[in-house]
Image (cartoon, rainbow, N blue to C red):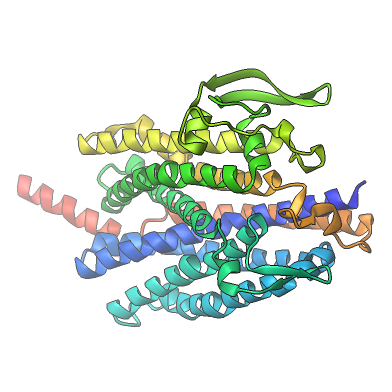
Length: 456
C-alpha cells in the first residue's frame, strides 16, 4: 500500500475526529457567555439552570477535545517530517502564539467557570465564561485557522534553502484568506451551538411542554440558529466562494464542476464527475445558466476558467471535493429552512405543540458538525496535490523513513481508540442533556401546587 496515502488517511481521521470537539466547545462557549449574562443581569433562575445544563455539555466536550488534539501534533514529526521542516519557520510563530495567548487564557479560566459557580461572585463567574469564550474561539481558533490559511494562500515568506522563511508575521497570519475563513468557521460552530440548544430544548419540551428551561433553550437556539445560518450563506459563504475562485481557480473549477472555460457559466446544482477520454465531464448535469459567472465575478458575461485550462498534474481529485462541497451547501440551505419554519411557528406561539418539528430539531443536532467536517474535507482535498499551495506537493511532504506497517498499525489503533472515545463521549453527552438542572423540578412542582390551590 502507498505509505503517503496511508499517512494522509491517518491525519484525515485524527483531524476530523478531533475537530468535532472544538466545533462544539467554540459554539457552546460563545452562547453560554450570553446565557450566563442573561441569568446574572436579569436574575433569571431559568437562564442560570440553562447555563448549568449546557455548561455540563461544554465541560465534557472540552476535556475530550484537549486529549484528542495532542495526537495530531505528533504526526507532523513522524509522518510529515519534510512538511514540518518546510513550514517550521512560519508555523512556529502562529502555533506559539496560539499556545501562549489562547491555551493558557482558556485553561486558567475554564476551571473557574466549571467549578466556581456559587464559590465566586456572579460577576467573576460570568467574566470567566467570557474569558473561556475568548480563549476557545477568538484566539485559539484564530491562530489555528491562520496557520491553515497560510497553506491555502501563502504570504509573508521567502523560499531559502528549500524552506519557507518568515519575512512578515503580520502578512503570514493575516494572509488573503485568514479573516474570511475564520468568520466562516466560527459561524459554523455557532450554528452547531444553536442546534445543540434547540435540540436539547426540544427534547425537554417533548417530555414536558411546560419545562421553562426547555422552552427558553429552544427559543434561544432557534433564533440564534436562523441568524447564523443566514449569515453563513451570505455574505460569508458567497465571499468564500469568490475568494477560492480568485486565488485557487483549479479548486474552484473542481468544486463547481466547471471543466470548460466559458462566459455565462452555469452554477451546477447536481452532477456526477468522471473522466472520459482523459477529460473531465459531468453526468446528469443540472445547472442554473449564468449564475456561476455572476457569483464568482459579478457579471453573467464574465469568463470563468475551466479545469481543462490547467495542467493535469495540478488537478485536485474530482469526485470527493465536488460531493462534499455540494452536500455542505445543501445542509446550509436545510439549516435556514428548518430554523425559519421553527421561528415562524415560535412567533405564532405554536412551536411547543408541533411535535413533528420538535423531533426534527432533536434529530438534526449532528448535522451542523457534519457540515463543518464536509467543509474541511472540501478545503483540504480541494487543495491537492499541494500541501502548501504552489509551494510544496503532498507527495514531497511525507517522511521518507516511515514504514507502511507502522502507519497501518497506528491507524488501526487510533481508529479503535477513537471509536471507544466517541462512544463514551456520546453516552455522557446524551445522559447530561437529558438530566434536568437542579431546582427545575421543585419549581415546576411549586407552580402546579399553587395552581391547584388557587382552583380549589
